[in-house]
Length: 152
Image (cartoon, rainbow, N blue to C red; front, side):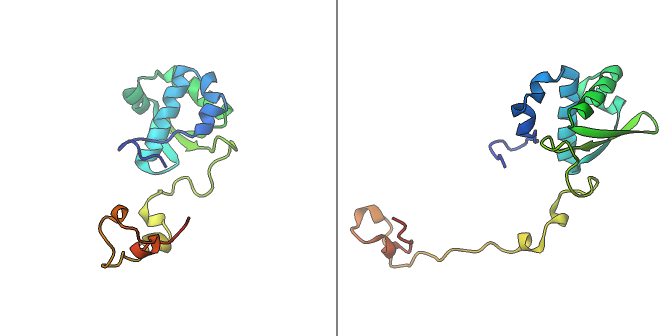
């Protein structure tokens, strides 16, 4: 997990490293980036959107979106299904396998789906004894004297 930026969304590195990104046209990249951002924002791998909604956010024309959908499916990055009202249901796929990620794509990936062990309190390491000096660099004591294990 990269935490160098406070707000970001994910793009699987395999998309870039495999050369797929270099093959993609701008409209295809626009749609893929939109889907990745929406997937992060909604915390789901199933995104329902109209062409008009996508156009309003990323400026891609309807014809370009039609072609981009087809190419992203050819690249095994998404699956999609047309719904009523020029709305499409997009399913994000694992770029390495070309298959949808395991589990129901509609399930939200948030705290309600975490296991019980993820909600437990973190294990605390033993405290440094009160007798340990504040500045160990000025002392000639063995490392164990400071409450730390000797790993050297």
